[in-house]
Length: 236
Image (cartoon, rainbow, N blue to C red; front, side, top):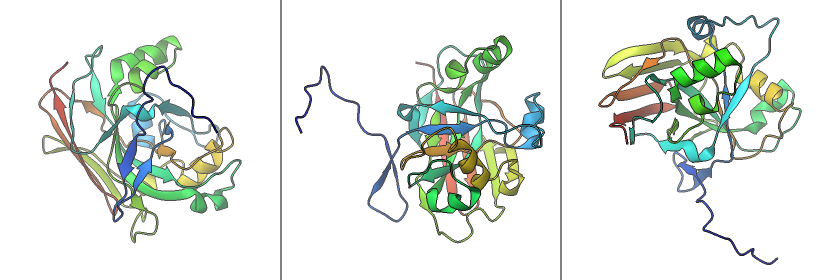
């Protein structure tokens, strides 16, 4: 097969470390689940009735990825830059139109994630019926720890998820409060997409989201998954 001549250099593959391994996890797509904790849905003014609705999703580009511990600049175009602490599922197999029973074989592992959000732009888009891209899918808006491979004891046993800003706890909940469980999400999402190895699914954030500013330090934790850190720098 002839290698095509490129007009300019192709972008690097975006990867995350895998805990306990010298290999890295190549990111293909980043799916994000909206309003998957009841208390967060209420604080966003959009309560969820699971009996009459189904999950909804938006995407972030893989190039938005930042590894835990980084310092990132306060982004342009916003006056309300907010955090959302989330459990992230890393997909390691191909799957389409899955049943909930199929979900286990799809999971490669888990990590902690921060869905950084230009909230004012997201809310403007929501109220005017426009896409959320400017509020959600922008440079350095997806922060991840390394991947914990499936099978590590204690992962997803109703563990705590929490986030602190400058040492003050802002988010604290439990993974058993997810409105749609991981098997339910994988079954639903795979009805719309052929899930592929390298896909990441950010499963939603608990209540307590709020703004951060240059100089702030974020630190999060999910039981049996790990710890995440982020520093907010000056605007560029």
